[in-house]
Structures are given as C-alpha cells and as structure tokens.
Length: 112
Image (cartoon, rainbow, N blue to C red; front, side, top):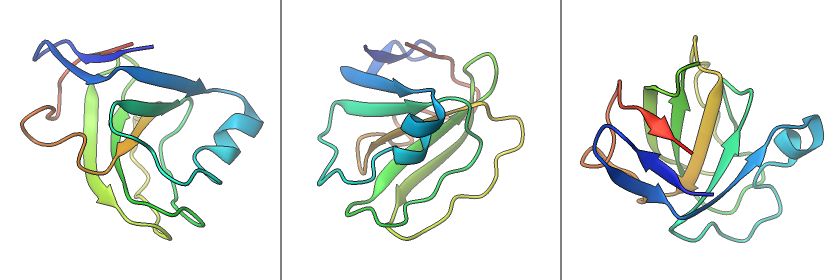
C-alpha cells in the first residue's frame, strides 16, 4: 500500500503494511534488521511508541482521526520512548531520513 501526503501531493512510502492486531502492534518492527527507504509500518490504534531492542532509528508521524499530522519525530534512536501524543490514533514508522520538513508538516493530510 502507498502512503501519500495529499496536502503536498507527495509519495512518502511505496510499500506500507498495517499493524492493527494486538500481536502485530506489539511486534511492530522488532526483529527487523532494517527498514528500507520506501517502506513503512502503519500502527493503528497508537499514540506512543518505543524503539526498545530495535537496531535502527526511525522517523515517526502521529496522525489524528482524520489522518492529519499531529506530530513528526525525526530519527528516533533505538532504546527510546516517544512522548504520548494526545489525539493521535495512528502512527507511521519510516526509515530514518525518509521523511523531513520538506515532505510533511503539522496539519498535512495523509492518505493510504
């Protein structure tokens, strides 16, 4: 599945998958050796994440119910916690460096 920033008419990821069960959300990217650019993980419902036991940094987008960007966290390193983002219901994880201020900002509409 593709992830598009509709506000900017820009593709953020060409190959994304959804973690929407308890097991898939708990597993997330754990056990992965890397997350190639162009791939992303959509976690729903989710308003905070961790990178414990991960081997690489990630860029994170937190979205509200309408899929509008509430918060962007760049390069969240392994063994870190994100803040709880109140109002967020979806989190998208990308390879570090995949998303930046030129491709996304608060309020942008993201579509899958």
